[in-house]
Image 1 (tube, rainbow, N blue to C red):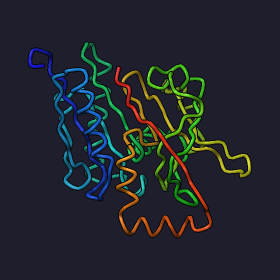
Image 2 (image 1 turned 60 degrees about the vertical axis):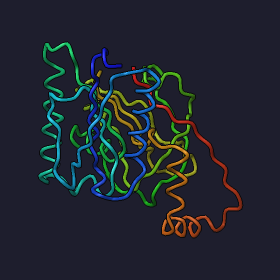
Image 3 (image 1 turned 120 degrees about the vertical axis):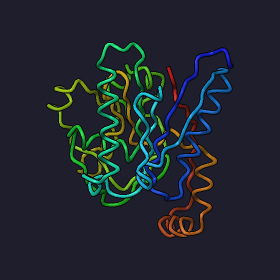
Image 4 (image 1 turned 180 degrees about the vertical axis):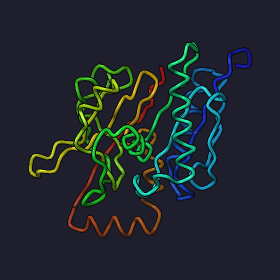
Length: 254
């Protein structure tokens, strides 16, 4: 591996110190991908919200931005968010330059919502009730053609864990910015609520999902075994006799 070019990945932690399975998931996927492909891959973690740590835009090849707790609206103007969006602006400027080595970025859940606010791509609001579980997601025509999602079934199943959502796509902004909506929330014909956006390609090098592709069976089990969440789940599902769900996760890096 040592004779191969180094591939450097920055993982931006937006969990603000809250216990989670997402950071473990990202790291394990990178390690598996590195070992399987015999890559000279290294990664560094930056505690963005709690410590205001943001990587330099020149120092890494790939930037992975995690989910996180809380409102994607209340942090507007905060010091960490200013530094974070400044990084995003610099990455975009780099990719628009003549530099042949582009910077790739992947945004998940909370960071998906922040990016939608940055670009004014839709309405951001809190759900009437949190969404959690292995749930169906539907591909758009653009999603079916996208190199990251093109081999997935429609619908495909993935972990959804959120209290907030982005709805009512701003078609004018999508067209102005050349962005594509790749996936939307499950169909719910029995209610009148609009379906949330679930995946967006911001540009050739930036892609984002509202759902959690880094989730795995181990993480779901750990989540449920935490006593507080276990009690809450049992209370919310007292009327359900059985529930079966299964899923397979993969991040396709091309």
